[in-house]
Length: 285
View 1 (cartoon, one colour):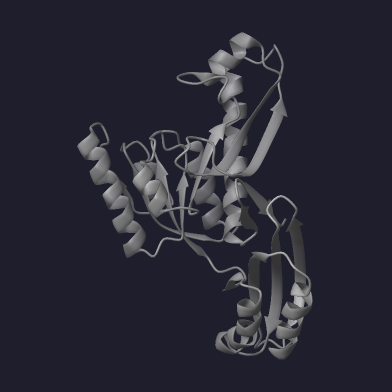
View 2: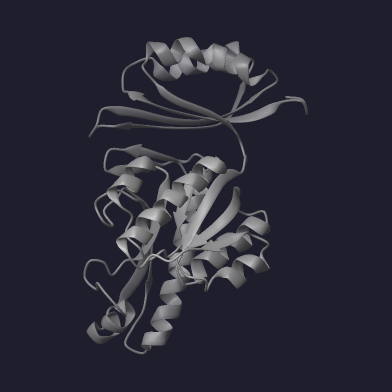
């Protein structure tokens, strides 16, 4: 391929049946494409076929889509075509904890994370200086009454529409999203929480963990659904600890895991490596 080629990422979900790979490969040949990466999975649980391809072509997007159209129709595919490395428009919500937000903003600025964050939105003003340090606009609005929460969520939807947001990241945003907002942003919201849930709910989970002498702590990143903290899991990490760690040390270790896990989930989402399979996810690493 020459320097004038475009590198595409194609994701496909459809009912599993014979001939899918052959048909897709033929369409790519018709479009003059060269496959540079290919991963696929057939789910016995749901009878669904999943595929992620990276393809180089010298033609236009319209030409590629025209070549794919008959295959998409034949196999009743849910297909998405995008440019490899395109920065995904992302809104970040936070409260007062800075560790996850700091990691996301740093990696975006360093070019390690393919997202474009036009705004950080919070229900407190604590994170304003951090967002300002990275040159990201920040806005805070109180969420202390039902009326304020409704207004806040309506503003979130306005921001999503105005900035063409493709992903909303809850970077330790300590508010439960309403069912209405969950439905409006279905499949577009990623949350992070410590892996003590549901064993250590409420305040000071790391202090509770220390008191119980836990040996593993970690974090889980997942899609947000109307079922609290039960959405499809994207990534999980754990680290071993022991009796010698103080509660403050457990907090520091846990925050590192939360930051690492959330950033990895966002990275995979931005690279179109996360596909939904009912209550779970398929991750093409």
